[in-house]
View: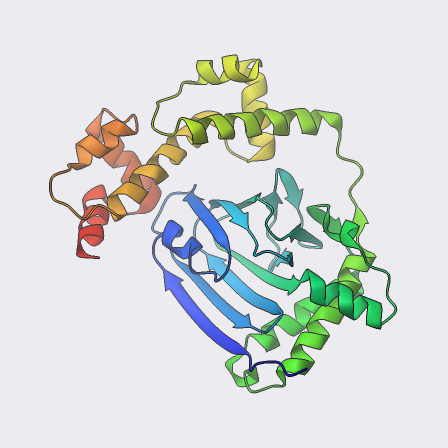
Length: 313
């Protein structure tokens, strides 16, 4: 079977939400968590049944991600930094795995580089069957996996070469075959994390319920007290749940979610009849001076600059 020539592309963005849409075939939304101007870059190689990329993000992010259907995503940090997937801390010697069409969340630190491999489930299972290897869908049910050093090191070693411009002319068939085979070896060696305590499940449920409520009531200002009533937990438990699952306290989380939503509106505002103060008020920011200070601190620019760029676009 012929395989189309590999296609290498790069993209850069100075807005986290715009950057989220630069990874082809994914559905994503990024909320910026740390203060400062954002810069993101993606280098991506597209094969017929696979996708390889390295992503750099300058600021800490809360990422909402969905991989394309009939796919399996394997992701791991390029350096020594840890991140979180669905509330679980992931160390550099571990790999993250999620199937296609499945919502998941990442919390990534500032100055983070991550490698990603997405392969077709159908192609993966077919190669495993042909090679007489044992692999089934249970291999990608756990979001955080541990792997023996050898296969993960092999995957780490090949990806920079795949993404180098000098390798674009290499055989797409050989590249894809090597990628699928190595992915199978990584998935085979992974052992499911069975040590997640029930207390984690309770904390995760608290965070999930808050997030679902905020999504359904996105333009309604919410207080910590209301969240305690919603989740039937104390303020201390609410704070502990957020800090252990997302690495951020609930008050800052509420503020950053609303600030990121204001930024989305400003960046897409093309008419002259809506003011910044009106948009900010819609998201619960009634003190314009404090709003402007918090906005600039988080995004590294005044809200007027975002609005002007949106109108120019």
